[in-house]
Length: 433
Ligand SMILES: *Cc1c(COP(=O)(O)O)cnc(C)c1O
Image (cartoon, rainbow, N blue to C red; front, side, top):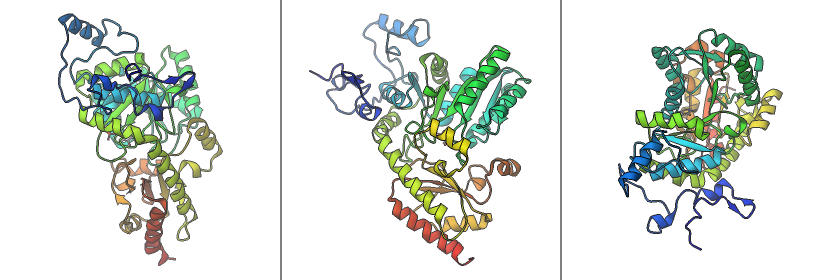
């Protein structure tokens, strides 16, 4: 038996293969590339047709004038629309998210832009959970209003009444076309209850005749510890720059959902020129092979580090890590929606900004940088960096205080990370005690 026809294999007899296994094979046929076990980087801008009829057919399919053949998106045309390296990533990411398909973009912000511009029109309202990632906040609150798209927000994703009231209030400004949420949210790890959100959206549909489209930014836990499309969210959005890329050496994004839901997103990506290049796509296909073990290891280490901070002898700390948030509603939603924690979490100390800076300066393994989900551990002071554009009043409301410090735990040995923290806590706080 040749490898031909095996490259979309998802079962052996009745046994369903796990995504981890399929990351090394799915969607790439070595026999089409000289037997090369790994996909080549297809450095080409355009693809030759065997006949002009084939070219005509490909354009009919791309423009949506004809359906694609079963199990295909149509032929390759031009690298702004599609190319083999990006299609391999889309096929494989869908396996992890549990979605029918994916659209990969040149950044997480590019993916969000494609979603918003595909589905929002002047006069519409978008409702968001708050706070969102800083770039998303800017896009929704500062960019969209220039196109007469209004915004609304809800603050407690665990409170069904709060979400329903917020959507009804937003509906007074126009048609609520979309609800965009982040769960868990950065840097507090707060959650949105998807079952409650879906009930709210059903109610809005009954009341207005339109069910707002739901989108979840699944960057923090997905696709290993949380899949949102199978939980009834219309689209999952990813910054692949973070855990999926996983080595802090690339920028990319993605949207996952049904073929129907992503048709407009794919078309918007092509129109605006938001596709990802072949080389970066290839790097992501490499990263996907180790994604599951990387996220698992980082999560295990993250739990150990959080436990050390919770138990530390130097100073009282509040831990905003999903395993350590002692709220019964939160825990019920966490257990229902997620299969593990993200290795990105914060701790809150009752200290000034200068003491927070002293603590960060006393760390030697943790690098002081924004971003998260890489192989190296990072420390970040959100109030003065990622969330510095948010007003002090809003920061207080969301709990992003001067004493909140965020960690992204990477792949170093957890004992070394704990030794680094122990040293820094001792240098910063022991004298004070
Ligand atoms: C980084 C990030 C984004 C933006 O992604 P880019 O790849 O930087 O464009 C969006 N959402 C979250 C939660 C992020 O962490």
